[in-house]
Length: 168
Image (cartoon, rainbow, N blue to C red; front, side):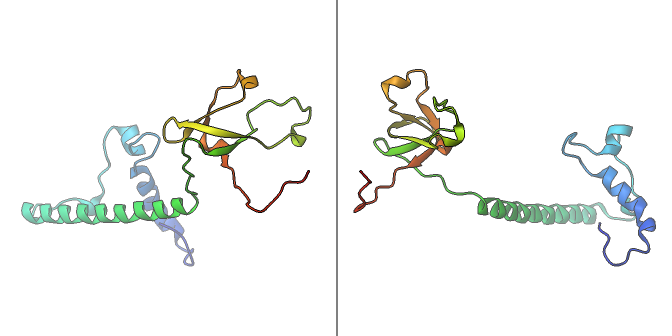
């Protein structure tokens, strides 16, 4: 429920909004507030089943509603996934032997000011892919205290600029 232009009768809808809120399952408790307090679900007069409703008709209606809800949930899940995937970048895949830069984010430096220290260290060859995201690098022998396995987010591929000579 929402309030838009017709804001003059909001107080008549407030009990219904309160009922809807108290009757909805909450993410933290996985149950409705009404059930948490009273130990049972509330009865809403307009959804009560009358005695003259045939069981077969009711069963068909419930199955139809469940099918519609399932379809709408699938549509919503696909929509959420589409919007979430827009913000995701695909992760690069490295092979053994590829050269990468290593982020200096979590590595202590001897330079007194972190702001002026190098952002990327290396380049280092990849020895192997450990799982889906961590990679094992060949580090210099002076770095014995640093574990050689790093998450892909800390690695950048080395781009070789052909025809570009570095300054002397």
